Amino acid sequence: MLGGIEWRHGAGDPTRAVVIINAATSVRCTYYSRFAEYLFSHGLDVMLFDYRGIGVSRAGSLRGFQASWSDWGALDFEALLQRAQREYPGQPVDVVGHSFGGCAAGLGASGAVIRNLVTVGAQFAHWRDYAADQRWPMLAKWHGVMPLLTRVCGYFPGKRLGWLE
Image (tube, rainbow, N blue to C red; front, top):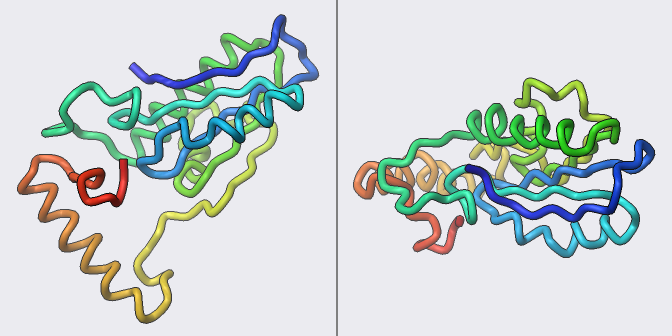
């Protein structure tokens, strides 16, 4: 079950968009609350959500939990697209995606309903994209340390390391 927050005006208005905000990797949706409140105060309906395994969409221990970027886009974001169409019928759907959240917008099967897509820093962070002096440390972190810790712990303890949720 996905959890999140909605800012909703009264009755549906076909001229008012509903904005779905897709978070960056392992960022709780509450991080975007002030931005959502700003959009709402300017007449838009807004939906925030946590991907499975994150924030209010986390169901207990992550040990043995399986989820991927593909799941977050094809399943979680898709569920929000379908919910937007069901609960805001006739309203245009706009999406703001931060980092991976911008990429996730392309993974939803119902993506054709998106009227506007704004991405902020959307990328799939590859170690070769970093400055030369940061490439090898990133390669070691992503392809050495992270997989090893995941294997040992049964999940990646990013929150304990201060890296992720």
